[in-house]
Each structure stands twice: as structure tokens, then as C-alpha cells.
Image 1 (cartoon, rainbow, N blue to C red):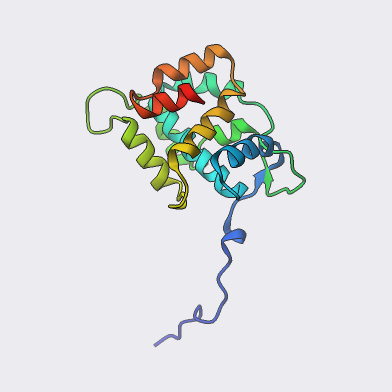
Image 2 (cartoon, rainbow, N blue to C red):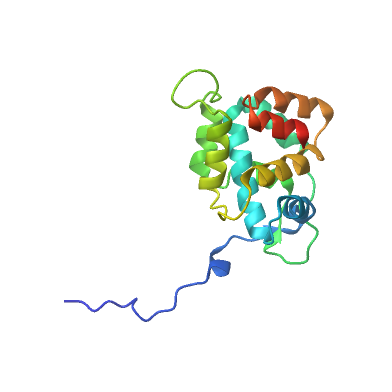
Length: 176
């Protein structure tokens, strides 16, 4: 019988396990943090990445690429290297498999099991992002939408609006 070697080894803290945030993402993330009532920039980044993932799932690859082309701006102005990134980095999926699949599959619109309606959009954001339960998911999504719209042309904002599912998510995009 082999002894369990990991019993007494300390586990890394959540902060140590988190990927760094690029400095250029901080202004964007600060907007999300303030408007979304999110005190932690890492949570703001992680939730933003999931909102962007679900948004990309709604769009064609070409539409998502047009959005990415316009998001070359700093996200948060900080000296902390762990928080440095560009907004377009947030738009791109950090999971290479998910990123690849999102480029080869059709948009999740129309009838079928994978259709993303407003309820599924908000459900995915809350569950895939690990959003703390005390956060208002609609407030957070609206904050991310507002910060995103501030970085985009009116043409791109209108294009994204066409991809938003009817109902509450389309309203949040419009209100942001």
C-alpha cells in the first residue's frame, strides 16, 4: 500500500490558480465592476469572458470576427501584470477547443435543442461563469453590454442587436 503523498501538501489558493489579467483590460473591467456591482476584477473578467462566449454562440464566425476587430482597446488601466489584457483578448475564448468549435459550428439560432433564448443566455452566464449567487445576473450582463457598446461602432452595435435573443437579453442590450 502506497501512502497518500498529497495529504499534507498545501493547496494553492484561488488567487494563485487564476490566470493573469492584462493591464489593457482594466479600464473596460472597471466599468463592468462598477456597473455590475462586482468587487473583484478577476470575477469581472471571468464573467465577461462567458458573456462574450454566449454572444459568439449566437453569431456567425464572420460577425464575431467583425466585433473582435473593433475591440482592440485596453480593458483596465493597472500596473498589476496579472490583470493586463486587451478587450479583444476577452472576446476570444480562452479554451482552445471551445474557441475552435465556435468557429466551425453554425449560430445557435432558430428551432432546435441548442437554440439560445433569453432564459438560456442568462442561465449559461450564471452557471458557466461561476457568478456568485448574490450578484444580479441581469445587472452584470447589462454592465458588460454597456462596457462593450462603449467600444464599438454604431454599425457593430446594430449588428449585435440583430443576433440577440428576443426578450430580456435584447432589452438589456438595448438599455445598455
